[in-house]
Image 1: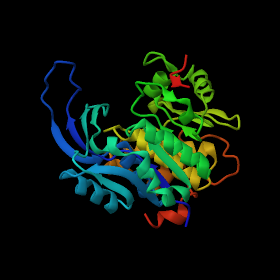
Image 2: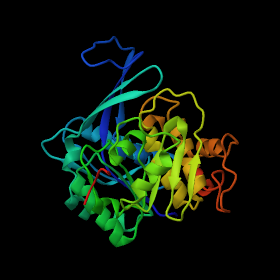
Image 3: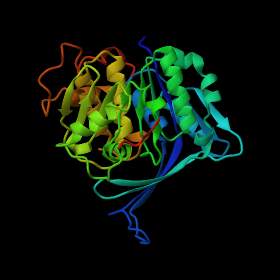
Length: 341
């Protein structure tokens, strides 16, 4: 049995409104459909890992409201271990209000609720799971002091830590966190925020410069997710490469970044080369946009491996390591920088 992936992060209920376009400030529009989905960036990544057939444990908090048991049960039914999920007394579960337009683009407002109660002492209660992990995934939807302490634990136990710096940080990320990261995986908006430039400044022509700036803040490796424009690798071993995106018909991009990180983590833990792992992550993210919802959109290992192994934009070299088509076979059957010193 391969080492489990542990996800430390948010658990939310997503309230999703679909319409032709996202309203402008002060504007009221008639929507087309309303749905509820289990979400939260942490829970999304945990479910995505489970869908890929890899063992995964969630560490997080739900509220003592009606949503709490529902969210916990949803994780269990998806195949996620909830040994690290506890209940915060006197607060609501986390909620995300999501508006999706006809092209699959979205706007999201998050009410943290119980997620803000996930504290360093809760990590202490889950030390056995953290110590035995093959990789730890986290995000910025829980308190920053918890993320910082998680980095300290990951360094102590020599476990690679992957940070998805989402939502885009309004305040500098402490360098102590960045220096403890094996992987930093911002999207375009988050990259601009971390590098202190206006949104939209990042392009495929200058992404290499942005990646070098981020590497200089402390993480061992940086993967910049650029959606339909691909993903750029800046690795500790000197590899610099833009991995092309997969062309799919997007319906809902809500959980694409979460799916990418889950696919990347599973591929790395399963021994794939970095180029193939990023390609596998990209395929996972792309497939998640072809269906509605967050956790309900997460693809299974076989369909991801099939897309990743296709010839569309396939890199020529894989460094002789396991390919996307074979790395998951044993498990598929189980179905001025914005930093703070």
